[in-house]
Image (cartoon, rainbow, N blue to C red; front, side):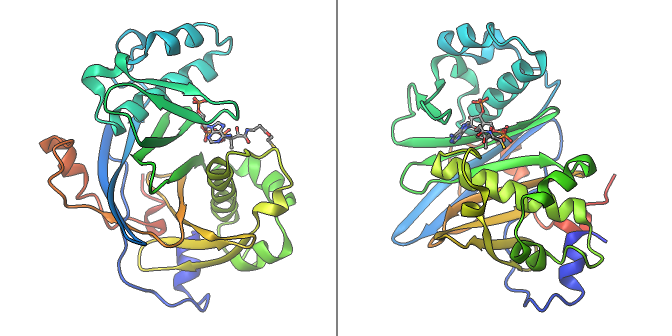
Length: 284
Ligand SMILES: CC(C)(COP(=O)(O)OP(=O)(O)OC[C@H]1O[C@@H](n2cnc3c(N)ncnc32)[C@H](O)[C@@H]1OP(=O)(O)O)[C@@H](O)C(=O)NCCC(=O)NCCS
């Protein structure tokens, strides 16, 4: 039984208003996210790209500095991930026609640092998983980070070994839920928080402990025990994957219907891909 069904079938959580969820259809897509609350009303962009997209070429995507790093990456898997992640990031920035002018360097903690025309005051977060990469870009005033993982049963045991009893109880692990999917939700939430904090996972993972988790109409949401000022939102954007966003707890997130000029007609159509959640995780 997928995680969402476990929620639906009596985890004692109250469904709330419909939130946003996006399905990663097609080879590439993006959607405008409305980020609002605490006096802010901003637009961020979530973009995704699949491996093999025709525009995934280093010559047309990478800034000279990125390219000089790219050619030194020894492992092909890492090299491909780097390129696909940069592709998603530049698509999220709406910079595909001037991608080589935008530079995403690694900061001292490995975090993406953005420079280039139109990039002032903007931040982004990147995640890549072999065949799929995604990125979220938006104003630095309303930061969002993300983590995408493939649901891999071979990783479940190692993930669960690093969870607390409280987390396992929250997720219904040990009952009859889909343990692999639950474990991936926990892991992506911690990875996305570690990107927000910039510490990565090189810390005591208990510090990143999840404090609460609930099901709204179409997504899983939660907070962190030691960081109540942040929250996370998880869903299944494509079969076999879990995506988690972390953002300030005071901010609401929804798919925007804004006419932001960043979006092409095609891209706007991506925005209509709402309404998919864990209950669709078995889609082919
Ligand atoms: C940072 C980390 C959480 C990334 O997660 P991941 O699942 O490995 O990889 P993802 O594809 O989701 O994310 C990679 C992107 O995160 C970003 N990133 C890397 N370090 C980051 C940091 N400290 N803060 C914010 N973002 C970071 C980068 O943009 C990176 O992509 P790029 O290198 O192509 O630019 C993880 O690699 C990590 O913890 N690194 C620290 C090393 C460590 O302590 N490892 C112990 C593992 S138990």
